[in-house]
Length: 174
Image 1 (cartoon, one colour):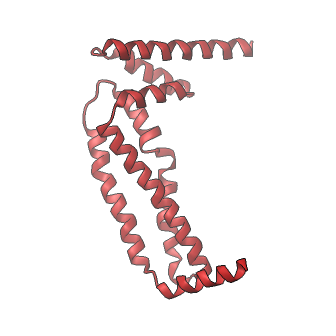
Image 2 (tube, rainbow, N blue to C red; image 1 turned 60 degrees about the horizontal axis):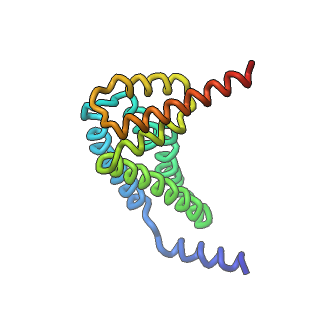
Image 3 (cartoon, rainbow, N blue to C red; image 1 turned 180 degrees about the vertical axis):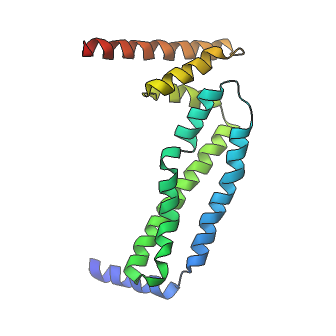
């Protein structure tokens, strides 16, 4: 039963004659849209410059996985012309996963540009584990001059809990 369904799916996929060019163009369109967004995000000067750069790279653009996402979109298409129908099905699934992740990056970029940046900054600082990034990010926060009282209070609460966690970890190691 399952094998029959797969064979039917592969037959339909083979008959659809999905062109490699169409999939490549869609992938390139996503990449093309992302370029001016990246320029806009990184181009403007920010009060929390280092913190914002870290938030953008780690949470908005997800720079650690970006090349992997591009690979999911474009690498399966390299083998498209020599692939049988069942492998094309796998390639399309990988391509769709890559497009999904690129869409998420575009959505996160939109939220960064249009939304409340402080909630993203707070979330990043709460989850931050890398000591070097932590030092740079907090230096960026305390160097800023124009922070409203509510946000400054939230920064202090997060900073205090971060220090408490670091002290607990340090005491546990001694």
